[in-house]
Image 1 (cartoon, rainbow, N blue to C red):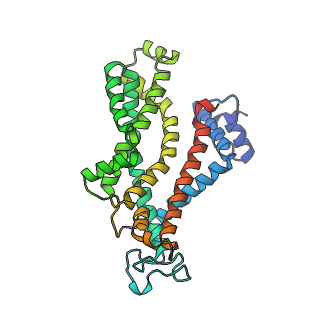
Image 2 (tube, helix red, strand yellow; image 1 turned 90 degrees about the vertical axis):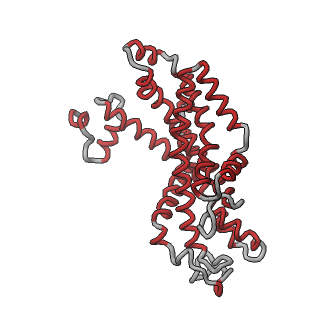
Image 3 (cartoon, rainbow, N blue to C red; image 1 turned 180 degrees about the vertical axis):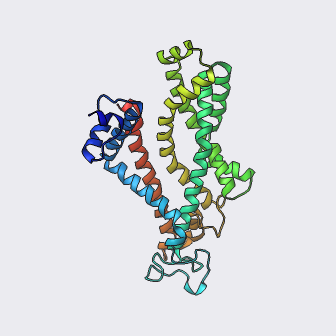
Length: 309
């Protein structure tokens, strides 16, 4: 028993007992035990596990696209255009004879790359704006929230189109435009969490120790907001994917011949009745990716949302 207090045992059962101990002997054991209980709760949700597995597969496919692709996605072969799925072209070919399977694989790179870029931009912005507004209060809170309300007043796609039009069509412009429209909900959420905890007893106790406002925000308020932010971001990713695809479909996002899923649908939408597989396959890819992130987000919400406890 004494050994279990220092490190987990080498056998499976003692390690599980160490993780599930009701009386952890160290902060490390308590942290690992909490994480393990969350994993057990998440694993019990079959839909969430389906979403997690699908997301992992999408990431692997995107990273390994050069290894998995059977053709060069940019090579044009007009003599092989609009071919149905076959042994040579697993998902058929598009109007320029390019292999759809290979283009969908590389399209995952573009789409997920845009998602990662948007998340890395909006998560810190939303967290900082929300926490500052909630903790500072007063005129700072009113100014920041009125700016947030202005962004929330417009539909995301319409606002993104306006920003892209002010810049120029392309992946970089689309990422910036989507990021500018995606941070307000995160800021509102972070502000709500901050307002809930800033007058709590433990924050008052920290103030009595002489901690500065910056230390209180970084060490004690931000960690409380992060789980809810993770859940919201995971649920918003499907919206980011659809917005990116919408911009590509309207010609304001990724530009041909880049194999982005929305752009692929836009350039082949005229073949939906006769060569249905050409626009349908990238549409299915968008559906699968959006659904997977929604399922994953629902599972994370059940595990990380303290209101579910």
